[in-house]
Length: 147
Length: 116
Image 1 (cartoon, chains in turn yellow, blue):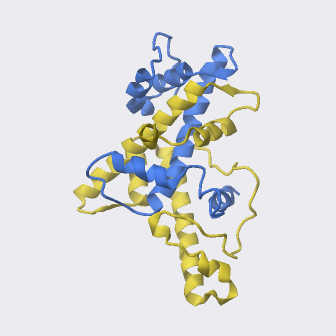
Image 2: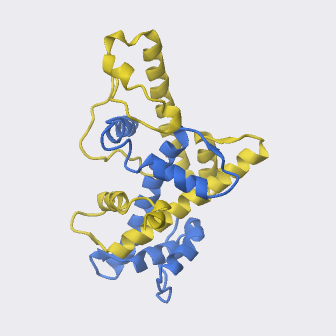
Image 3: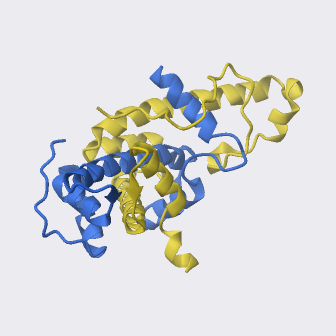
């Protein structure tokens, strides 16, 4: 059973995303969520495949964020590509600032130091650093709508 | 302040360290990416993070299109057939045609043609 689910995103997460875009009174059948799970996995594979091909052609071993953006555009998801590119730059900026904070000295913030796990591994177990962050708002209505 | 919204989206979904970074689990995304081909050997740390956002957008779009089909059927419950119809009606989702067919969805219904 675990193997079956391994190639899919968790249904709870998928369902949550679906729910937040629909009107409050909307209902979603379980099968629709399952179908969406499969579609999402296929989407990831599809885009990754394209990004990976590009890397191969350019003799690069690592698929990075720019490759994903490029692949999104190449496959017709231009709207996503734009939004993702902005997201990527914000993320990189965030990471740079975090890295700078650590270099300057973590004495101000011991939490920061102890939570500085390697982002490179895709793991994020850090608490928000004391940057001038935007207010964390309840609810993820933070998505740029492709229009 | 759309950019701010997106940024706080990173932090909010993001670095709480408790529920996991984002709306979607990065490790799982990475696993799915690796399965996409033998050539996919190394994946940068930011790639799954980017994908978590891209998947969100994707799921949102497909859900919205599916919901339009649901409404046209004067229903309030989104069914997998609605997803199938939305896929068939949208060019950029051509790669999903087999996925929704395997789900057993009927493509007998007249697809609603939507522009993208």
